[in-house]
Image 1 (tube, rainbow, N blue to C red):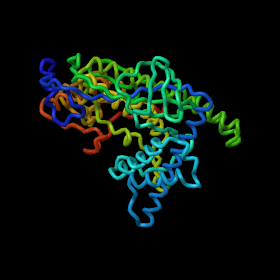
Image 2: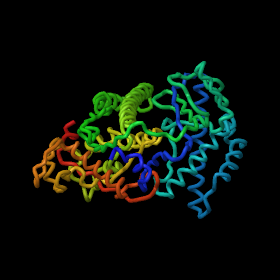
Image 3: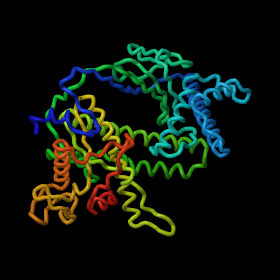
Image 4: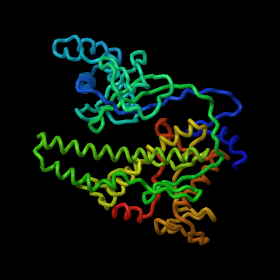
Length: 441
């Protein structure tokens, strides 16, 4: 397989990530974002809060107008019509403070609303909701001509903010396209998107690996490697619970309540940073060492649905299922897949997503499928032929075999859910011990 890997990669149909074509000397445009923490002075921080508030107001006003027009049976306004209203709002006597904010970020807010409606009608997202203060406060500068980046002095020029210093942790490469300023955990950040042309990449590795995602362990590779989970939320769960109890004892919206809320936000920020750091390091290591990665097309949203049920039809094992859902979301499977896909694209590799049905129950030696083959979380023993192996590694080998079938004859390939095609794959079959372990943790 390794000898013909390069040719097979260029002929696999319906693959999620397009492999490189060695017969052509092509260039590809690579988009990349560089995020830094800003170090604004007091005046700049107040201005950024005002700009974020102005964008939030414009978004809510436009959404309320669209809902009102729908209730009256009128046609939804497009982006051009909303921009005309935005000009009236900026010049109107009721909201003259909108003129203090830069125009382009306000227009980008209307584009975000238009995109939210498009995602809703395409059944990719829920109906747009009103924005709240303190939740995802951000604004975006789309014109690269208005952005100046001085990496030598660790500062960036943004319209109506001037030169703002930032923590320069890495070099920004490529042509600057836009900049997004956001507030997270009480700190302001800037995300600079760049574009650069790179040669059609050729992956340095020639190996293919199957990967089985799990709850007790983050992932198992067909090579025998077991990756332990970061469990970022679990490690800080007691600290987070104490902070939440302390906040519940405070008078709502008092100064002490705000301090307790800020403490909780800082804990969530640390949890997010630890999780992203683990996912980036793990996905980078796997992408560097393997040209083809075969994964399961897990529908995380379906797997992490609540089992509470309703008043008339209550669910069963709600506590255990809630703990399992928390562990699944804490692992960050969907984000890991996203990172692995774009990193493989950059390196010239590929990611194949296969149907996860019975990958944990099938014997690779004789092909017998039975839930009794995996009675425990860690051990697999075929009831037909007696084949034994580590359960997660055995599942990874089954995933790898499914990937070989796809590359050889175009088997069942599940498209990426972001593409908006295909049907949902069935839930991954896990033994009851996985639920018990998650509940115990």
